[in-house]
Length: 415
Image (cartoon, rainbow, N blue to C red):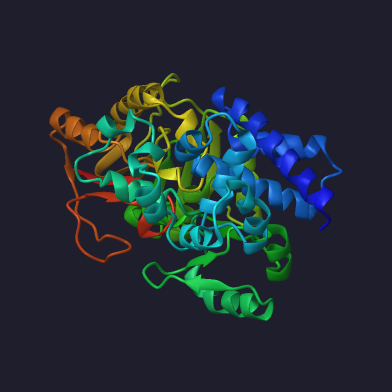
């Protein structure tokens, strides 16, 4: 690459991060802002887009420190982020690292252990990589510094493959020379490099493939839907857990999937058709505002909207666009959801509550409050899907356990 082209790429990347940082400050996710920019600039080739995307997400991953290391220089903040980030390739580091004016020995030390180097030579702390308000929101059982470390490495992409198709699927991956990790803790969970191409993989497989974080697969495992059961997925979203419930309950089961967003349900219907599932019924429904559902189910899953702190390792910009207001708003809607749909669990049935966050208020506090209000519900112990040890009916999955999303799960039984 010529010196002029190298300089041009640096200038463009710095300008892009500044633009996207402004978008993130207004609540727009960085991946959506990045996609919009790439659509406006078709002249960016695939290698350019890969480079800029890497810089953008490294930028947000290390923003708490780079704002201190380079408070008035956007380009230098990008250079520090790329140099610090474990996911940066050697080619990108060789392009950006010289801007930090570190010696070769110092660069090598940074690449070997960026946390130790910065702590020793610059005096920054891990807490400076997180927003201040988070301290009060986390339960005592969550190690804050462990969470911060988990947020500094991008997790793999996870697939959920039905057990009966798993051997053939792994053979296909091997034939396509696609590296993967078979996670034997949870049957059917396969980890791939995050940058894999889903459409090409589905073409090679000849059918739909379920992309689902391992923590979400743990929610499906905690539901433990059995053949022939009727379940209500209250906040179905794009339907990853809905599909898992449908596969577990089999062709004789029935899944009622609702969401307040029609476009999301359209996506779920398309995914359901791609998986050739006929047991899923969808309905546009706001479980807080609309009239109650007059039916009872063997199981009700409330995968509630939340602050999303558990997704921070995968979405580093979310650290800087999430605040205590999102936590407070989530608490109100989660409480309302649980109160309303608990009535739809048949006597002897199961209520499963999950949120992809690890705050005290959005998880354990809700369950304690609900159990205090309703004597007909009790925690039902289940095995930790990853550790295979008993729980008391509630479970907090840490982001580094997958690694993947952080998740709170509770399984309650109605007397």
